Image (tube, rainbow, N blue to C red; front, side):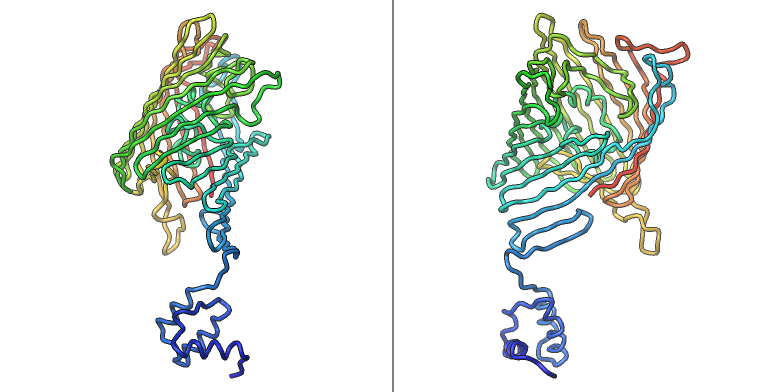
Length: 453
């Protein structure tokens, strides 16, 4: 066997008994095989050295798996992950013809198409940038930096979700239905993403948050004037928190003050509390219209959830108050109760430090072969109600029922099928139906294909 001086030195060191303190690289694999074959090292020493790599702190480790494309330095001071999501929807209505002088829109669309970068800088700073390319436009979703160097507090600055409502906090990748409930009528319009400063203290079974926010990126009015602003807070506690059993309770509160152009968060003149039967339907059974003389909106809510094995139930109740100049203050309310059953036996994922459910993870991914499975199947139902009638504001009142069947092929891909029907409708102002239409017979069918990592 021929060998150079470097190889001879390595053989001498290993044979001399100091092999346990010497790291081996992938380049040395052949050498280790030779030493093992010559019985110069034992099998245990071979196994230990084979697992080690000599890396400097600036070397980059690259991974590609179910969590996306990931980069990290060897000392883990710097990390970056590239991920994306795509939601493609097909929507059809029954009984939506001639409503409000038009027909509910049926068809297909790319509901969400997002790419994000997130990671860590110098270990204590986390960042995220996420952009959505759906709806023929580019929209900034998350763009923020979080300092995590304190054991008891996280500080986030930038464009982010406001800390209100369990349902609103949960990712669209993880919720059991294609659209959020009627509670979103009062939470989403004023408490979606915005520029702000947010602080959070947390433990394994609890979280407490407080945020101060301005307007949303790209939503400011072109008419000029001062922007609106607001504050919100949310606290959660999970007295029972295991992989198969969860008891969650929480509450939240917040307010938003209007801008000089009488809008709240949405960047257009006026603020309307409304809910679309589907994202592309253009049919609003609930719609207050622009609330005149609006000064601010306040929000109070309670949330609770329980999971036992494959069964779970979740509920929220929210009240929104509209304070107006020169007119009476009005209140609007909404609630939902939803239940889920994983037919294949898996429990939902839950994170107590965030106070929310995460994505369901199938025990066996879809791969109809000898060692494969059929993924996870989930059946869910939701009963929700919203009342947008108060004083001189007639925004309608709706009670609805939604049934969903979800197929999780693996942790990254799922197919969702929803059926939603309005079972009780008090018409809002201006809602017109033709002689053959019944507001309580409007059915919405949604089919979604989703991948996300």
